[in-house]
Amino acid sequence: MSTADHVLRNFVVHQLIKAPQGPASMLLRDAEIPVSPAALQLVDQLVDRYSERSGKGFGRFEDDEDSFPMPRLLRQHVVDGAIDFLTLSRLMMQQLLASIEAEPLAAGGYVLIARVEHADNDYLFVALASEALGTAIGDGLSIVDSPYLDLANLRVAGRIDLSAWQRGVERCISFLKGRGDVANYFKRFLGCNDVVIALKETQKLVQGLAEFAERQAMPTETRDALFERAHGYLDERGDAGEPVSLDTLVEQAWPDAPGLLREALNDDESRIARDFVPDRRAIRPLTHFKAAADHWKIEFDRNSLRSGQVIYDRDNGTLILTEIPEGLRRALLGDRE
Image (cartoon, rainbow, N blue to C red; front, side, top):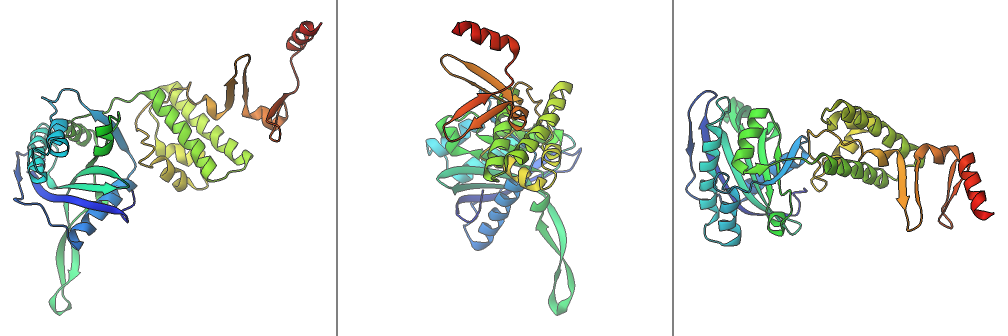
């Protein structure tokens, strides 16, 4: 998401106070933060850091709104207009406090809550940022400590696509996976069910690879090599029953410029989940073509195009099959006799 054309509608910062193994409490701000250049710059950084980060999970709201009230709170604010943004943020803090209390090792920080509009979509960002200590030049050119919000090392954050949620889109929530304890308590706070359907996620990954190859205008040989390397990695993970690592995938599939592929697959629009075991049925299109019409079906691998066993004539849109098996040849001749 580019920050150049987004609109900051609401913004507030609260504080969640908790040391590892310690009790939790909160300090709540009594008013929204006015939209100012400083506020815009901070939210710009938050949106940028969140968009750049890999390792996101995606999900939908849990159905049980008594145990996971986030969708009810959002409905009261976004749809019904029964509560204002500050009230929404305070109620969210109560849920976050209750959730983090169940994770003894989790630590607190400053909670940034921002409602942002971008490209006709409405988003709610929530991030837990810690404070870091830097240096600055003080009076008399002295060196002084300068505390700041450490968004560069953001570990706990989520985004709710309010527009998608209101349209009934299945996966309208994303969050940074982080460590297990972080992911668990923050998912509970968001009320997020991130059950991943391996087949659908694998299909989306394959589609993402195909779109990347198309955008890069790859020659046929280059595209086929990309697909074959990706297929090899995904087939191996699927066979072993182990989850996909997108970082490993891009390094193996596109070693010359893995950053380009990583950026494409991390695009928020693609919403490819993490930590799913690839469905080996869904990766077959990386190495095979399959099609059917009313009276025929055909399947062949990409190697057959390179070897000349299958020839595609672009001018008239026909396929020519060579080296026809003897059994099929006799059957075809028999039908003509």
